[in-house]
Length: 268
Ligand code: NAD
Image (cartoon, rainbow, N blue to C red):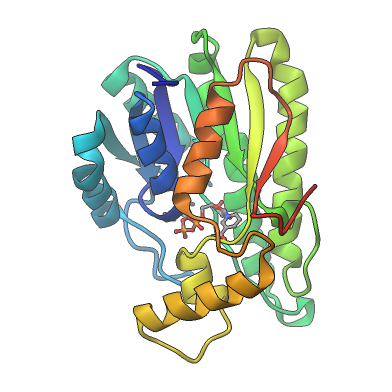
């Protein structure tokens, strides 16, 4: 029970990697608030989560411990303030903030719109700033305060047709290092995880080159591709990311790192 009674707030927590982090934190004894968008946002390249997924995840994970949900749009400062407030009202504080919400889009720069670029940076980069700023006064009251950002292996290596996403994730690592230096005096540790390839909506509904449309077929194509690409021979899972977050949340002398969890695909 490495996180016994710690209070963990996870953005983008309704599904995918955020859900895996929530599960691992519950199993480590934490009380968990998952936060995600209020309604399905039809306006992106693939479907994002919404209140339905938030409610479903709370129901599914409740047997493991204390979990509640709140809505947030991490691109909106007031909404971030409200999500922190909801966590304080529910559990009395915040010890661990996990800035995990993110969006991906890919494409050659000549066809990439300014709106696509701005949205990626608004969620993946400005979202970290707004949520961290909103949570800071509350984190300062905690003896175990820590921020963990979900960056990416795309924050350590640039990939073709991914300039916005890679740029936003390099920035996430830069913000992590800056805040680690800045907040060390307050006893607040700041780290990042860098997931490799996890079969979530980002891959299965957008990045995966496949002609298959059914979910089982997409899963199989993803697995086969990752088995070939990744040294340890399998894709990463939300549980792998949860394990890394529990480690970083409970490692008292670790700050400023960007931990690749990528089966050896990215070794830096
Ligand atoms: P996902 O799409 O399943 O999860 C992302 C979550 O963020 C969704 O629930 C979505 O609704 C939420 N979100 C999007 N915009 C938001 C906003 N404005 N406010 C609040 N929530 C918002 O995909 P995932 O793979 O679970 O992604 C989680 C994180 O992991 C992201 O930061 C992503 O960039 C990162 N990541 C994923 C992979 C991968 O292979 N899947 C690899 C590296 C990094």
